[in-house]
Length: 498
Image 1: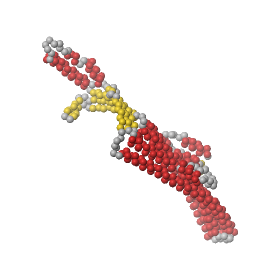
Image 2: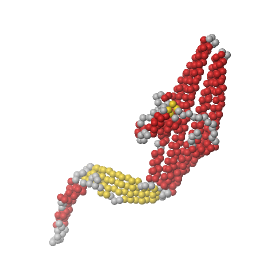
Image 3: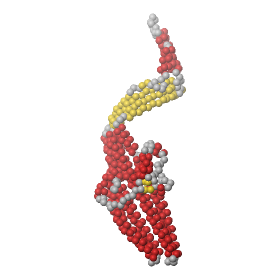
């Protein structure tokens, strides 16, 4: 059975790592022999509350990377295309018209860097936040382990209650046989037989309730682990047992260890460190100047959809130039002067083809724009008191965090001391309840003998039986109160004590 449980745990450990696959994968079967270590291991993997806390680790890690990455320039690449149809539009009092639609495209590559006080203190703040997150995860792990252990003990306690109920049923069944035997020989009345039958029926109900209690506690254990319970919870058997040892721990030593290892206290100290880092960042942002740098490259294209349109425009310009040249030759030159050769302004087929080729640039034959760059340095003079406000809020957050740590230290000291004295009392109670159980068992034995020989009544026997049952139940409760006290003390200290 242990090999089967180990195989199941190994199968869980090598399962698909992807988050989406983990969400969609079927829940693993709970081993039929479940130890406390296996229960804790499953809980650390499947507990919803713990996984919610653990999910904060990845953002905290990227927060540290982002803080160091702030010292590197940002790089952005953009591009786009545009289209404008033909027609006319009015701008103020002018009417602009375009007989041909146009298509355009462009790109832009830019670098940018801004360094200020928060940039310089960003890594320390991010690292403090990461440590606080890790402390929260560690605290959640310790608290989850404590919760699983306490519920594991609750199941064992319920199982012990079933054993006690079965013992009581055996006793009442024996009492019923004895009462019937005495009735058959005329030593008692049918009333005592009926009382014995009622007592047996009540013990049967108690056994049924005890078994139902085991099922309920097991289902709560499965819920704490984070997995649905099997259809028949009785198939899962808890294998661990816990010895009873005399408490030998020194209270002052435990208090010192709790001051260092208590998960909630560690978490609050990490938060206080983060508050100090945030306060430092606020002060740096007040006095440190802001340095900015930007640079970029860009390009564009613009193409007429009607490739003949620029040719027609060029022809019109050519004809106008020829007409002006001829007018100058006829009107402005002195007689006998050398006329200008107006044929040079004529548009040749090669020129027209060049115009068509020059228009065919969309979308990737870009015309580059000149490189641009800028550097600036600014000093804050007056910010409408926003920076003093930020510093004051950061200081208040730091002071609150420090007081929260102090309050938690006092609470931890109280919890550890209270749990320690409760453990001492629980251990002493075991000894007392064990003595009571022995005395009640002897009382029951004497009552049985007196009833068997006819010198005692059935009422006396029932009283002795009730006293024995209460003593045995008190002994079981004392044992598991002791184990629960150790579990509570370990949770308060933050580490196992045995």
